[in-house]
Length: 288
Image (tube, rainbow, N blue to C red; front, side, top):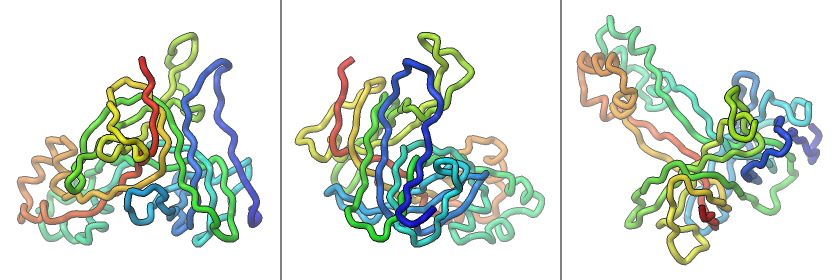
């Protein structure tokens, strides 16, 4: 792809008459890493926050399905300045115990703290993870980044809400199911003769329970439709080895814990995990 050329990917198939939720992302940033997985190309993009809530640079994973845009293989490299158009979606993946221990700087844990007969079972442990990323529908390579862009527009149905303590304030997150035009159809029949689709799930942050541009909190109820404008932000959480192992809910894993030589190390071994979300600047809560 030549410098300053624009590549794009067309939307998926849809049934005539279907109506879709809004899901549009526009960001500019610097590519700080690239890798491939299962034929897809991933770009680690460093972008700048624009809304007034203080934050450092945000790191966003951008997926290019099959490495192709507009039917052509992309040409990208570390250091490229990019303008990306796309949509935000959830990604589910598993993490091996080796990857976790490597990130935590304790790759020797199994050799030093686990009976030799238990090691094969430990190596088979997997942690279920989920995050969000941007699926690219268009990419433009820039000579330089002029106007910084970090904009997300989406709408959908609230499926879950929860509170998060930040300093002396309490923020509210809403998990939104978005049925945009890029969602995949299933084999099951839905309403009006159309196939059911698999929603894209996106976490939306409301600082102190309100969009940043609003002067009052909003009431977020499950099954309520909502439209949000905001920007992408990432959040880092510290998790311990013990938390992840207990979180598997596997009785075999619980049994393995009983044989660990120094159980205190299970709590001491920690790493940082990131989660991408949308910081709400404005929102419309539709009446039912």
